[in-house]
Image 1 (cartoon, rainbow, N blue to C red):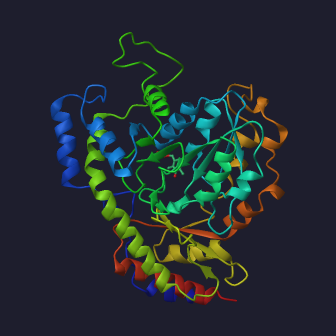
Image 2: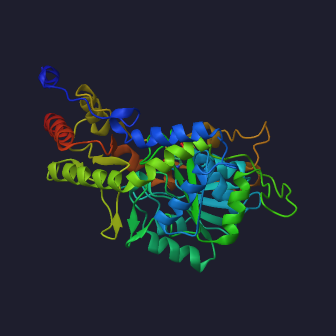
Image 3: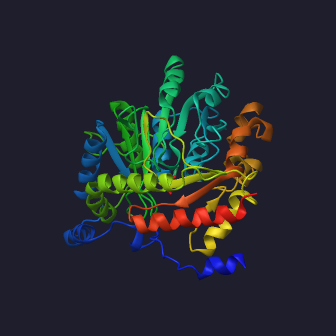
Length: 410
Ligand SMILES: *Cc1c(COP(=O)(O)O)cnc(C)c1O
């Protein structure tokens, strides 16, 4: 009955960031990729595209150094390795993030210590981070989730007072700003991802950025098996991997970068339209951000009040799917520490290293310690977003949400 009415309504196919309809890939990428292939040089150690990408990204961000690498995960690993933590050192981070932001900490022998999040933004805060500080805290990794900057002033003050480095994971936050400054320039180092679904893409790829010359040096070495290219007597100076980006990816990224500004502007404009169209809808809270922040909408995240909307985010997600809108209730489903790698400490053989070095509190994943995380995930409904959405797409989403919520309102 209700469902019949819904399916009778014309379904609009939404652009998807998983294929051409939702991506800004075109002749520029094709031309440069072809140029890379014709050159016959596909490695960045000899080619020019990756170097161009690194220079342009550093300029765009306004930092001294940027390096390209193989993935966002590799970028996080490179950032962590640059800080060279001792085994068992702690890196405070968010339980609502991509596993690619956490696995590198363990690979580097350090312990991810999870801070709770603000249930409204799902971002870590100075207060939740402070509650996890210990004498072993080596760094703080903030994730600007969905493109919404963390409250950096308070976090940086906390970190600076204790001489702790801040890593910004900007995988979801290209173009985002805090107090007018681009995210990725606020901490000691920043990582970005060029994965298929990110603001700009090469399918797979990553970038790191810093203003610190010594960290920059360590990072470029880490990406290159720590081989001192160009040094008078190069050697493999320390343990490191080949995380290089290929010239093919570099070529595509060079073509993508000039499009970033328009991509970001489009996402902001269409997101603002949806926010406007959903204004006053009972049981639905649109994204909250600080007036100091520019949110660049990697995704558009709604909060659904289950006390108001029967079945909450899960049921609303089901109703939207019937109209061809593929949302994700609960985003990553569960906090990262609920995954087996943390629960069962499955790492290297049966050793459980580096968890064996951890203080008990550092690996205490008791639910009561994460009220904001569990409450936030319960209510969240993540809508896919792309720069290719038009007003028509946004209005279709808004109408679909309004109609579904109208039917579900208690
Ligand atoms: C996508 C993402 C990563 C990992 O990037 P990959 O390119 O997929 O390896 C890390 N952190 C966050 C917050 C991400 O969204």
